[in-house]
Amino acid sequence: MCACLRIAEDFKMAAAGSRLPQLHKGLKLTKAERKMMKKQNKALHTLKNRAREIGGISEIPTPYLLVKNGGLMCGVNRQDLVNVFDKCGKLDDLIMIPGKSFSYVLFSDVTSAKEAMKNINGQKLPLNQTSDRTFYLAYLLKRPCAALCLSDKSYPSGMILIEDFISEHLEHELLQYFSSCKETVSSNEMNVPAEQQLKHRYVKHYGYEFIYGSNNVDKDNPLPNGIPSECLPVMEKLVSLGCVKHEPDQLTVNEYQPGQGK
Image (cartoon, rainbow, N blue to C red; front, side, top):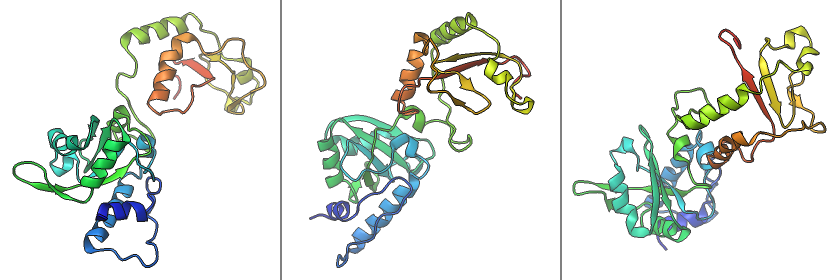
């Protein structure tokens, strides 16, 4: 049994950012296997702050692979990865992140990913005509989203920015729709203490009214109208990108004039 398979069977990969479990008693590893274990452990730490993108490391094979030592920072380019991984099956996509030492290789099926794990993980392979490279692989829980992966990481922790999230056409439709539905702040807000009140502005609630005094909604008192159909493209995209697990059932729209909200 090759080293990569022994590692995969004797170590259960935990969620992103956690450590690999301890060795089973009596199992002796070769120098190459110990090196591979160390590299895979580093791969987990690499993913510590990226769980939102990939969900974590999977204990069972999936079509999605983390490729350590296969990033742009390591001098590896997209064609290099294609040359190596295309031999294992049908490639679906590659995600390479500027300034990172890893990349994501996405196959169309699990069988292809297992073939890559068998033949590439921990093996010294020719990368191009001038150099060799050893890649260290791990299965991912879910398919990484390129838009989330490539968002600017200089923002505060937990914040992402996705450029051009909606089209100009949809932006115009949303502005036009909500402009026709403006109303003043809700009565709930006016009943809370002055220090908890918001500055006067136009606000509109859908699905449930957001109660600012308690920062919650009354689940037993839904509003007559749900979230308007004009917002469906936004909600569907939020779900598809993994930003939320389910389509929201409550929406609050605020209009801020210059100087408000500070």
